[in-house]
Length: 479
Image (cartoon, rainbow, N blue to C red; front, top):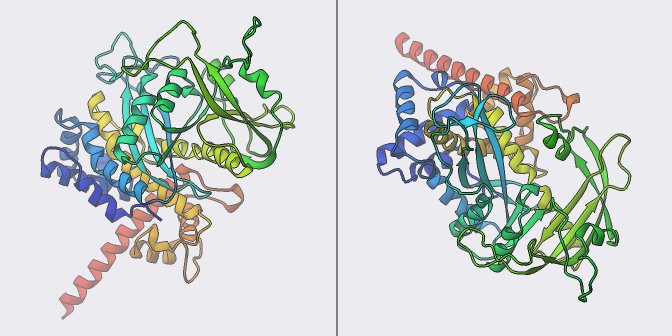
C-alpha cells in the first residue's frame, strides 16, 4: 500500500523548496514534533527556543504555503503514480474561523462574527473500499470582500478555484487519464464541465441545478430539463449504503441543502443515462478564466441515485452525478457511485485539521502566518487520516504501521484495553481510543476521542522513556 510512514513524512518535508536548506530542516523538525501531539498548543509541543523559531517561520514573508507543501506534493505524486488504476482526487472547500480579529482576514459571510477564510483543498485517495488517502495535491486560500479586507484572493471569482486545482493536480501527476476528479454540488458549473471535457480529463460531479437538455429533434416546444429526463430512468440495481449522521448547523440555505439527519442504512436505487446539455445562455460565448470559448453543447453520462422509501421524517437521499466515465455495465455504474462516496474522505481530512490538529485555535496574528500554519499541519493531518484508514481497513495490517515499538509496549502495559499477542493496526486504534474514553457500544471513535487518547499515549511514552533513562543512569552510578 502506497502510504507514508512517520519517518518518510519527515523526509518529505526536508525536500520542501523554501529557498534555504535551514528552513527546510526546521520545517521537518516542526512536523516531527507536531506528529507526536498534533492537538496541543505550540507552547506545549515546542521548547522555548523551538517556539520562537516556529513563530518566526510562520510569519516569514519569504515563506509561502506552496513552498511548505512542495515536498509533500512531490511525494504524493509519486504515491499516485505507483498506484495501479485510476486515483480519485477529491476537491472541496472548508471554512476556517478564528474567535478574534486577525490582520488580513474579514468576517466570513453569514457565519457569525468570527474572522476567517476559505481553504480549498485537493486530496488524492486510492480507489477501492479501503479509500486510503495518498496525500495532498493542492491548497489555496480565499478571503472574501469586507470592510477590514487587507488581503486579496488569488482568484477574481471564487468559482475559478475548481478549474485551477484540477489543472494543478494534473500537472503534478503528469500522466493523462490517471486521475478521476470528484466534486460536490458547489462545483456544478457548465464552464468547468466544458473545460475538463475539452482537456480530456475524467470527473464525477454532483449536480445542483436542473439543466437544459438538447432535444433529439428541433421543435418549437420549450427545451426539456434534466430532472424531467431522470424520471424515465429505470432502476438497474440496488445498493445498501451507510449514511452518516449530520448535525443541524449554518443558516437557512445551508440547512436546506444539508439538513440534519440520523445515521442509518439506506437502500438506494441506481440508474444511468446519456444526456446532451445545452450551454446555459445559448447566445453567450463566455470563457472560464483564460480558457477557450465554452462549447454550445456537452454530451455526458449521468448516474441517478435515489432512495425510494426513506424513514418517516427523513429527507430521501438523491444524487445526480454527471460524469465522463462509461455506464455500459452494472459494475461501471457502481464504480461511479463508489467514486463519489470516496469524496467523504476529504470531509474526514477537514475534521483531522480542525479537531485533530486544532487549526482554528492557533494564536497567530496574521493571515499569512495562519496560511503557513495550515500548510504545516496538512501533512500531519494526512498522517492521522492515513493511520485511521489503515486501522479501519479490512486488511490486517501490523501495529508497527501506526505506532512505534515503545508506544506499543506502553499501550500493552498501561492501556485500558488488553492487546493480543500480535496486535493489528485496528487493535491499536481501538486501544488508543479507549485511553480517550471511547466505549465499544458507541460505535467508531471520533476525532476528539482519538486525539485525547493519542495525547495520553504520548505523555505516557515520554514518562516511560524518562524512567528507562533514569534507571540506566542509576545502574551506571552504582557501578
